[in-house]
Length: 169
Length: 169
DNA sequence: CAATATTTGATATGATGGATAACAATTATC
DNA sequence: GATAATTGTTATCCATCATATCAAATATTG
Image (cartoon, rainbow over all chains, first blue to last red; front, top):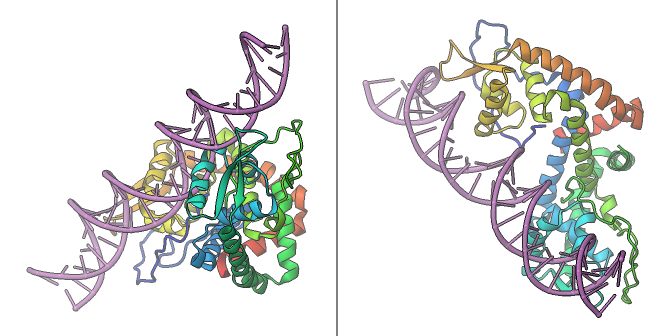
């Protein structure tokens, strides 16, 4: 869409009228943009990711990294291809990502004995510990704030619709 | 998060049991990932943008370009900084974007007479025509399909919540 | 079994979006 | 009139995403 982080401007300064049709000094009219679901979707997503980063900042985890750790925890014994594809990450791009996590000793590649081509990706103890702390931060800071804003019922409805779009649209 | 376009894998092939704990051959467990709002948000956003691109493909407009045209139409007489910042685009990045639209004769930069630093960005006639066609495509193909999936009431509720998150979170 | 095809992780590379610093021209402020 | 701020622009960097290709290992097939 567009919809970058903020790109602040309009610090509220005095304007003079421009003689042509525009209402100067005022905020621009979003118009039909505010009815475009994709636009609000993108802006909301950026906000949520920003807040996620803030909440998990002490652990230095991005949303993507967090999702990998979560997946590793729930799915032991899987190889890179399986993990990556489940998250919609292309195999080539997953290599550097794993390198990052492995270099921090959050997970480890282990050669599979069944298929010596593949690397089983395992959570390390440190990875489990970091994941546990991250989960707590996400739950108590990030998701809790969302619950506060929307209310539990609305939050559930929102999640349900988003999942439906992701799966069925 | 992660959440790329598709990165298809798992083309459904025969597996053999791995002797360790994992249930092979089955899809991976998303686990708590399916409760993470940010995750669903990102996946839904990618789906929506993909569909938008498909629907507007005949006009070769990205969501970002469409949002610019919409904004220009509703806000004549504004300069680059105002347009860009409203959409959350950083001024430097908006230059190339405008270049693209201007080279296709969808809009034009006009030196302001009041402030000769700034460029007023105007929709051209062709820009207006393309925008009109784009609006129709978006309404009849893209948004209509969403309405079909969610129902009008749910769609409105979804939009409302996303806007709230974008504005208040 | 041998030949061929496929899969896995990896590398290189390109395209795109987003962010910052710096600059010339212009305007605002003091 | 000197200094500061703003506008559009360029250059540059970083991250994400996508494709082609490769060697090693495995699967398939004749």
